[in-house]
Image (spheres, rainbow, N blue to C red):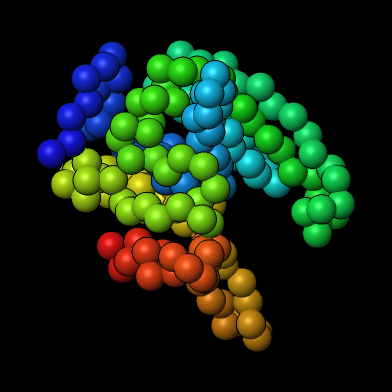
Length: 167
């Protein structure tokens, strides 16, 4: 049974929270280590960064900090925007409700129970967050569009990644 005992408990019925958890699961990071309690989100689209800033402000009254990363390691000529939030209470809350901590490629995780038990709006918002960050739409041939979805997982825990997608 999921027990959340803090000031954000009422958010578990908010589709915006489901979206944020899924989007960070896709293109973000939750770091909880020693004194660090950092939530981050990455995107090539400034509109995505602005949207996430707004969602965090509405949900948690947090102002994020945005940085531009134009290093060549991203294998793309476009900029990558980084958005960071530093809050111990919010980071601990997100961990408690099922957001994976650390390098998601090497950490098994599943869809949070409150999302699985949630109403259609909660489930839909979670799926939107995942597809907005991990989904693609591309054209193979003229007028033949395809939808793709991809997440990286360490081979040692590949079964957990498949189980996540099966959920």
